[in-house]
Length: 383
Image (cartoon, rainbow, N blue to C red; front, top):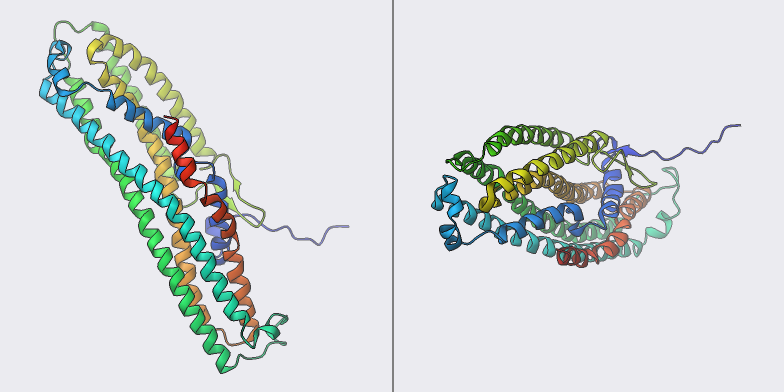
């Protein structure tokens, strides 16, 4: 004999209703990412960025470049080398602003969760003090429901307007903070593509002179081929993870990750990229040895190649975080519109039940948010 129990379904983002999205997605996204620094950096990705930062901070200063005869022997203009190194330092310094903004974002999340819970509890308390609530709480269907009195209708709509307006303002402020972090990270990544990579490539192409080993010249085409393959994988990865909450399935029983956080295809592309990066590192090590005193170019170039890929993950994570608050903002605004149509005890009960389902997961998110700054600081101290 078959069971009559219907198992709750887990669904991808585009199959969820608005209420399901705000009920499931925030808590399940935060639960998934709770052990990652600032939610948007895996420790491995942060490690890659910090290695790049450390490598840049060890570059020779202007006066050291001028007295280093290797650069001239390689056919490089000293001034061009210093401009490149100084641009790298400026790029690394911009990372400090990203770190500071991430710390602030973590602290702001805790305050937001506390305020959201307080505003929601105050709204629900006011509703439950209404004369109609005692009857509304036991209403089962439309046949049992009666209309709200004029007094209760006024109290309800005024309370909703006050508290949901406050919640909406908090959400908008949080969105501004997240978008500030997103803009900083985007700028950090854009500088690599628009400035640093072209400069590095230009300088390496100028290397020449009588003392250049033939082996060095032979390595460049192999490195170029690997770089092209890595960029191809980067484009594939970008296309796969660009969709909102790609590879994630949400539901009452919790989050399901389909073949990796961004899906099986994306994980396969990531694995292929890692293999190409390892091959490139081997060639780069050989090339660095042949470059001698100018080996910094190849070290930095390898770091930049890997970091570009990592920043796609970071960008996707911050976009998902932004989308959480976009969902919350839409829900808050639509709830105010729905409130205008609440005229019966049953509608009142449904409004409160729906609202509580959305707010209750934020108790858990508040607990997670308490650890954000600590995790981020600990992760930074590791490097």
